[in-house]
Image (cartoon, rainbow, N blue to C red; front, side, top):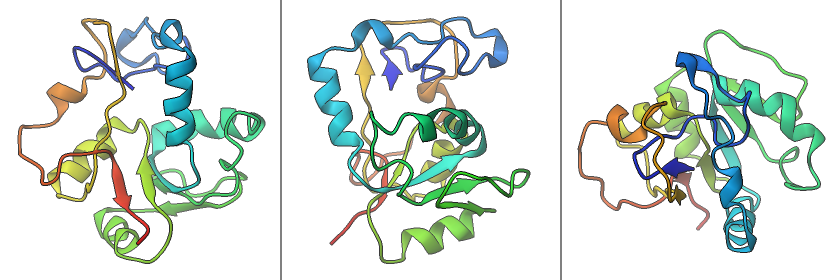
Length: 170
């Protein structure tokens, strides 16, 4: 989820990510409607996840208790890029250490591999040309401050430029 001016910080709730003094948490809520719900259901189809440490810590507290909204979240593999967090009670969580681990996962057989949030991880993936598709769920507002996808990523054309999907089923 991203705003017109590129902010991707804390779309889900007011306490989601307060770093940098961000005070607009939950900004996507006014745009939740039937159409956005259909898009979210499509995005939430079973696929493995690659998450940065910060996104994972937010999700680890929330999603295991909300499987009624995302039924497959506990059963898919959640790969977490972290050098500081190495264990979790959340089922099917695998911790990885760096870009080589990501390349190995990307090149293995398995379900689609998606990235949600994880602004620093997305920057790393773009820098290393590891994104096959990039989907941006753009919301019609500007916030003026916050973690900004557009400012974090130096311009470099991608081929093809689609959604963040690292491994796609054949």
